[in-house]
Image (cartoon, rainbow, N blue to C red; front, side):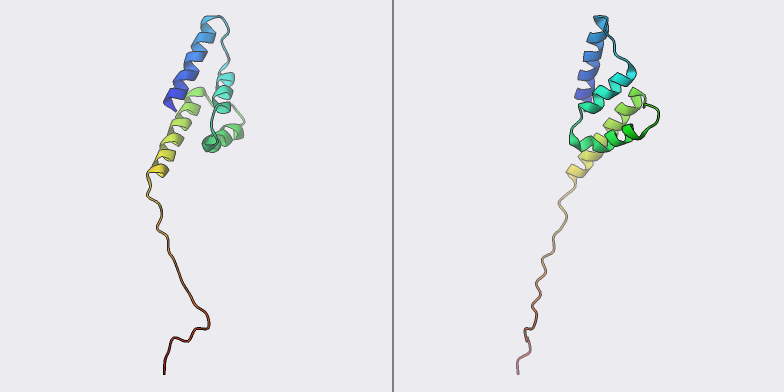
Amino acid sequence: MRAFLLKVQEILNTLASVGSPISPQENVDALIEGLPRGYSLVISINESKLEPLPIAEVEALLLAHEAQLRKFDELPDPPSVNLTHTYGANTHSA
């Protein structure tokens, strides 16, 4: 995510240097549009706000979400249980 944010910042700096800066809202929109599906929660949070989030807050949300995704990736697989049940079988012998 940090690399993605740095790349976006590099593009913004290039645009500003040639006289075509973009607004903070356009910056947020560009970040959001470039996100993969795993960041849908961050997208939803951003879209649910009446006022646009500042770019610094969006970046913080993205980094926090990435850290959370990494935690989930590091968790071991949950244990599985195999149950066998027979119906109508008489297990008692005479």
